[in-house]
Length: 312
Image: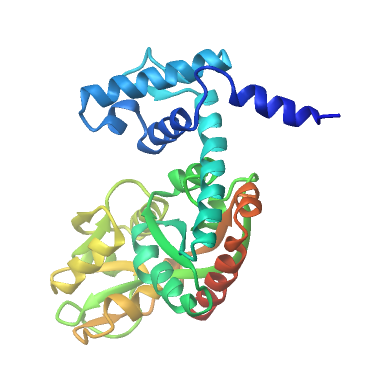
């Protein structure tokens, strides 16, 4: 007797309008974020993608593309189907790579500074025990990291511990603090940097209203002063570049000292008074369904965890 699942798979495969090419197009739209971005300004390509998704919609009887919005984006069922299709394509690609003795591509996500100062060095150090793995890095903000993990666009991410949603699995918890880095020519001493220094030194700060910036502003306000924001940056690596000019002081994660200023004796890391100490925790996160489909990730996660533990 033929198994019900076998019958179901064959019926689905034989449906008009259902094909791997159409599923691949759906994944392409999901990855790009919209059908317009996936077509890259090519009207013919946009028409083809729209038609292929419409044919999948006829198969499943549900809207996969929200055509009432501009630009056209996938609906929740569309994202769900794209997630399942992406995992299938990734699993088949892994099998093909292993059969051909080629490296399997593993996509890692984190913020720009975490990639540059932690994740990339950790992966390079861990590569010795990971034959057959090729890394790709994606720079995403914390909200998009968790979302991209759940949608299968990332394999593993290094995220703040508080950003890990219940549907994700995690390992490791590494605490780090923020430290002030000050060019010697701006610094009056090598001693503890106090709240009054927030209004005295020209600071390069992250733009926006992030938690750490609000913490600094509140500390300054309680001391009857105001932090002197001389430059706003969109990333901590930009803050590090600003500090290198000798014109600005800046707060960076402590682990930046070994990378950003390793050869620059003109920049010093000042100790902080207790009132300005601010800590956060990092963790590695992934989706269990991705781990089950890609056994290579167990080795990757273990290797990165080992190397991060040496650095944090």
